[in-house]
Length: 185
Length: 205
Image (cartoon, rainbow over all chains, first blue to last red):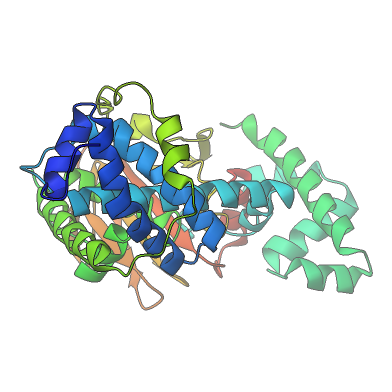
């Protein structure tokens, strides 16, 4: 390995961009322990921080060709790669968690709406027609959830039903309403 | 035309640090992509973070980490990746568009990393007046196309607006084209109209 002690970080990153593996190795020794420290501060466990720091350094190798020393210092450029590695990691974990819990995201969102901009412009009759397609039991949970704005747990208690039953009844009702709704779209 | 309404410095700082709420970062990023001034500010924050990174006390890597990484390297660094230059609206991972009223459609953005927040695109036809409404949690919005006006002024393509529970406003679509906005909305809302709430539930937002 060539002696790279006198090279600046920017020199090493530019050489890495030209495919110089020993420059990359020198950059790794300077930065991987700092990237690991940064990831640890963000809350990664020691093992995860080590893995992620390795991944980030592989990204440094892959993208070094696009590094422009006129635009950013090497530390800034490496910080952005480490930050993005962390965000991607969170994204992956959240996805896995969401799927494991049978996608609570959809359940939560089905009770909420961004604002009531649509409320007044919507045709009440269309909704009434759609509601008429539901069974009495389905209509009851839809009314309690959307009209009275009650949490699922409270509906379950009120109707003396298991929480899962309330949720699945609501989900089926929404599917049915949506199918009806599509005819208008 | 460059945007006239920008995120505050603390929102941009959080964005640069990757610390925005999931989903909200997407709305800020949309503005930053369009706005040269905010891009420069984000770059300044990133440079400060880079300096902080190089000043951090090192945490030793596992023995053999360097060898493992060296073994993963391709022969030469990858070719530089071309930026996707399509308009943002085409690049967003939108779920199905659903019409929720005449002239109004909404499409959820596929953002599985943000299960607690809603991220969606709302399009409202020209001349539509939305109901006066309040916000019960934080909401970020970047205008993608068209324009709207409320008590705070005119918001056109690229403009950013942050709302919190104190905001009570009545947006009106301006001009000849539909106003299309990207939103991220936090937390549980207490909507007033149950029909509207149901309509949005049906739209899967």
